[in-house]
Length: 140
Image (tube, rainbow, N blue to C red):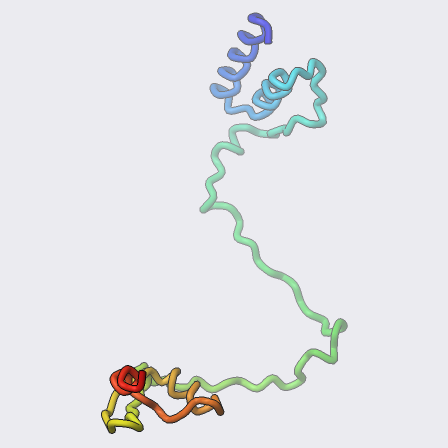
């Protein structure tokens, strides 16, 4: 980039910042890329800068869904009389829900193990009765 073009770029960016004009920033981008001809179609145009600067995100119109389903598409998937689910009360988890009491088949010691492990042992056909860690170490 030549010295004169660099000054033009700096001046152009300063002017864009002062005026808050994005079209000038786009022109500066074209200059940086080395494109001498700038097409006006590629430059975004702000119609009224004063109005555009005053719009706040909280004051924008909220989107309201105005769609009305005429039930013409996928009618076989639509329930004719949908059933409402009643609200059910779920009791909070307690320690008894998370652990179960088991008895060692070798020494008779009573222990707590996770309920998930107990469920797995019941489903698994190859697992034997529960044996505590002490008894397993003695076997080896």
